[in-house]
Length: 353
Image 1 (spheres, helix red, strand yellow):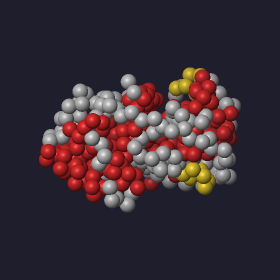
Image 2 (cartoon, helix red, strand yellow):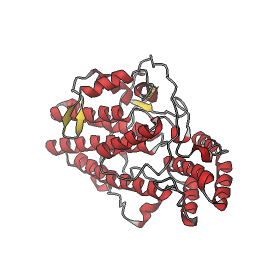
Image 3 (tube, rainbow, N blue to C red):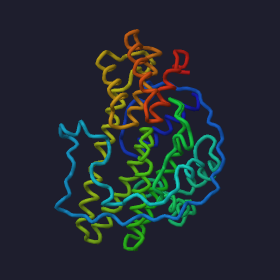
Image 4 (cartoon, helix red, strand yellow):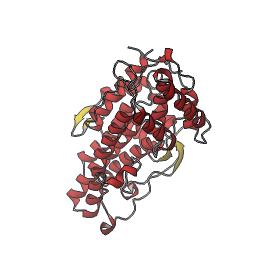
């Protein structure tokens, strides 16, 4: 099993175990492609001064749980419909948190060994494994959670189709859960609410770029963990408005996760044996998502599937895929353009390599 397949399966395991019961057959959704990430220099700067702004006032009468099961939800982007600024606005720092987090990436992050050692310090908590409350990694990450940006592509890595590098998502979610775990240890402390809000800001940063579905799911899991912590503290303190807002956000987590599973299943063009299985209807859906989808991560996923169409599909499908990719390669969105350009270079010999 090559590195890319191991990476994707490991990331999927993190999603399933930590983000909930999202299950789909990833192997067969797309082939493995060999890729060796180049070592990156360690980030030696410090996080710019920043702070997390106070949440917006919660007006209970204005809160409305989104109906993810209603017909109109089919047109929604797969994002929180509730204003997360009610719980935890993004920080105002000028730094790019991705420059710090990339140092823990596998297989060649400059601080990979430090990240692995930190994972050994974890202990089981109510929401999974967490770091000790005074762990130095948590303290270091705090100021990075208050930055306004987390952008990996192309600031850290280039989009490379099925070999696109990913940050260390186990480290990322452990940090968020550990802040919430620290809040649970002393829920009456003034810092408890801020720890939970910090976890939500961290999750929002992970989702901000909207480039890969795995990172997006982990970001959503961080938001869920922080919202759960806020709910528990609000219930303890009798803060009904905060408790209600947190509960509504918690209720949005599972529908988004399930919508992701549904989308990935619909986009898959190869079966588990890498045999082409898409009919004309499936092909139309893939083209629609790639060209006008509301979520960039799904557009990028659909573009990857169009690469497989060109490699394994019937002639008519290959022609439509090439035409669409030619147009997408000229997209003003640099990630869409880069992924489409890659897809046009993907060949039959790359499938399953």
